[in-house]
Length: 227
Ligand code: ADE
Image (cartoon, rainbow, N blue to C red; front, side):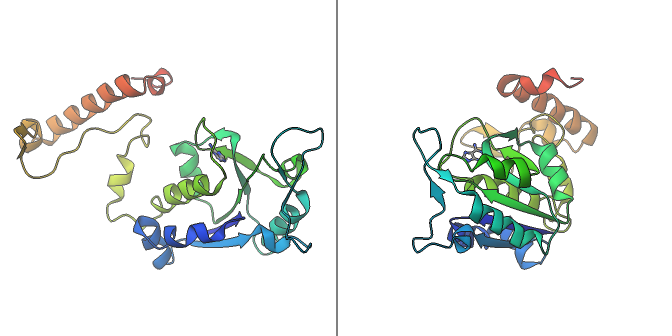
């Protein structure tokens, strides 16, 4: 899968793309991420990518021309959906992540300042995604969130795909608690059912604990489910 990232800060992605699960996906050639510096598509001496908002007000707006050229330069070789990361977008979730993980290529646009010129949104953006109801200084970290979530869903990236399928959110509810050795730590024992070898009982316990946690921390997830 090919992921193009249009950003004013391409260096932010360097370490991110070399480490952990994303690093494995890149090294194995399962995903290829190419950063494009939006500033390379400015044509003035100061490489200006933003300007004052029409109508006044605080903050700067990303200019349309460099964004237009940057997007077109990528689209010329790769017909792919353009996804703009913005707090005004649809709220990202595991279902959306899974949909994008199945695509051949995507183009991620990281905004900065006070949004981008609306005409780019109206004409060139196919989807707008937010990673949560808070505002970050730019779309780079949200783009990394999306890349990480997509990378780990690719075939061959995780040793055990069952592990991804039992994650929180993959089944619409939170995951269950997990334990590893030692069997006793600081006086606290691993629940005996997990040592019982009875897989049916273990599954039932995990399901109950997952529901308990979901009821406590994310009751909203249960509203639209059959639980
Ligand atoms: N850019 C700034 N804040 C953001 C958010 N919460 N989600 C996506 N992009 C953003």
